Length: 249
Ligand code: FPP
Image 1: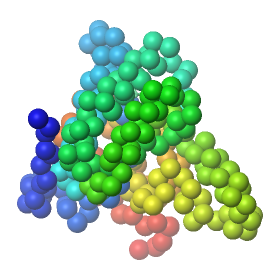
Image 2: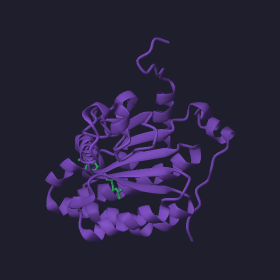
Image 3: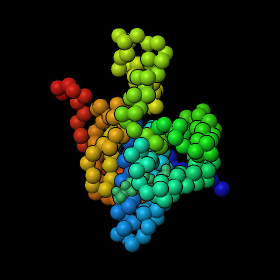
């Protein structure tokens, strides 16, 4: 039996201290602190990643419930290959487990899965699994769930420019719009807010192009502990900001 995620009414959203009219359309999430969470408990780092996966599932459900339109999570960066091979393998095993076991539930909840990043370096089996998930959910109209795997923001921009050049686009036609139309999240609104857990305050090559006008919210909460309270509190902080987009208001 798959779980059907609740859709909160306006009153239920307000009861959580959130303003439905100011809900971000797109949330970016840097899921940091799994290792520290595990270390504090004298557990292996992989146990922290497993707990992080559960927190990520909560974020998908809750984003759906409160009416966020797109959620992008940083699951594996191009720099993460530098980790010990055992940890890299454990992360990919978790990802494979997630895409295999949870896809029915995500599909039943109308979630559209998009994997962003350079999938060329992944094993054919892993790629097949990710492509099947994308293909199966491509016509869904609910939450767009972008999972960044072997993703790097600079590499994404290089990839976008290269595809324009390969298409024979003239230098003067390489515009911001043209690049926006070739990045992995083409057609989606840019993230209104990027949340990073575990106290670090940097972007780490995440959504560099898309983050031009994003608000940043940092929380000391380690990602496995990032539940309703922490997510709501980050969204409240975002809702309290004035977004000027370079203008004088
Ligand atoms: C950062 O924690 C987290 C990651 C490098 C990976 C994020 C992965 C997950 C949340 C779990 C699996 C995800 C999926 C999609 C199945 P860290 O290891 O850098 O923590 P630390 O900074 O405390 O060491």
